Every structure is written in structure tokens, then in C-alpha cells.
Length: 235
Image (cartoon, rainbow, N blue to C red; front, side):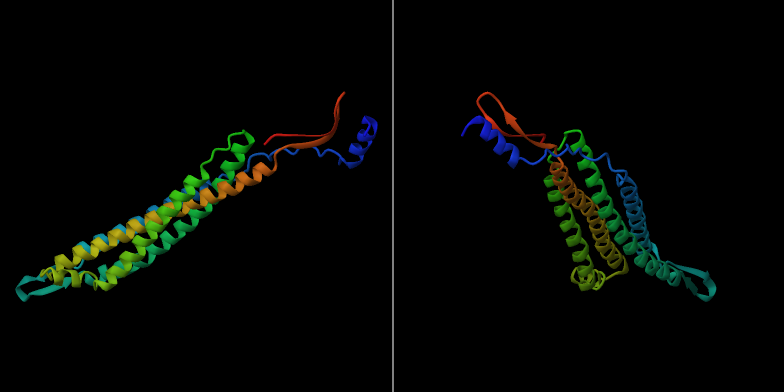
């Protein structure tokens, strides 16, 4: 085939070169507000949890109002109501913190991946965050669910103290409190794991989309010895 014929064929087959597509500008939302909200909400939930542990360990203390008549007034009613109220508020705050952490991690991951793509700094951090986040989330859920089930199975500390031959109020308080400490730790790990996992998944998705917007140009090329198509781009 002569060079002239090859040139005509290549011009007929080649599509008009598409204009270069730039990676869009930085996203306006960084997810920092959601992450801060998750931290504040999680801290409030942890505070409520620690508060009810304090009530459990120190509540229901009796006080002799009229010693000569042996009349005792206790704060058990007030302490019980506070404990039940905190037992409702603490899980709600932690569930809200999990949602905020997951949402913040998603927005932050997309924000970070797009910005790094704009500056040609596509670091491979998504697998690390996804692996660590999944591990921390699984550990947190296992600790939370396991401690709740163990607390009920242990009759809120009574069975463990009975097996140890120390069925006293102090022993029950200590055992019950220990299960609640594991519950609080599980909730905190769940919040952290949800945020890390969402960040890693969102970063990986954003990095794939950014790579798809790399600049590509197709155009016919003719030299003294070659006629054909040239593909140029940035990947």
C-alpha cells in the first residue's frame, strides 16, 4: 500500500481527537465536619457510659436520717432512673457516632483521592485502610456483642461471684462494671473501624474514577517511513 493510500485510510478511520479532559477541581466537602461530629458524639457516648459505671459502683448508698429510729433513706430510686436513662442515651450516641464516622470517612476518602490525583500523588493507601478498618470494626463488634451476651448470661455478675464463692454486693458491682468496660471499648473500636473502612473504600473508588479521567488524545501521524495513529496521554 502506498503512503498516500495509507494516509487516506488512516484519516477515514481515525476519529476526531477528543479534547483533553482534566481532573475536576478539588471537592468542596472534605468530611472534616462529619469526622469532628463523630468524635464529639462518640466522646459523649463514652462519657455517658462511664457515668453509668460510676453509678453502678457507687450508687444506692444508704444514709441513716433518724439513727435513734433506724430510719434509712437510700438514693436507689434516683440512681436507678439515672442508670436506665444513661443506658438508653449511651448506645444512641454511639450508633450516631458510627453513622457520622462512616459518612465522614466516605467524604474524606473521596476528597483525598481526587486531590491527590490532581497533583499526581496517587498513593496506594486504600488497601491498608480497608484492611485495618475491617479488622478494628470486626474486633469492636465482637467485643460489644460478646460483652452484652456475657453480661446477661452471667446474670449481671451474680453467677461469676457465686462460682468464686464471693456472692457479695461489692463482687457483683465489680464484675458487672468489668463487662460494661468491655462494652464501652467495643463501641469505641466500632466507631473507629467504621470510619477507617469507609475512608479506604471511598478512596479506592475515587482513585479509580480519577484514573479514568486521564488525558487521552488519538490523532493520525505521518512520517517519512510511517503512516498511522498515535495515542498520547497521561496515566
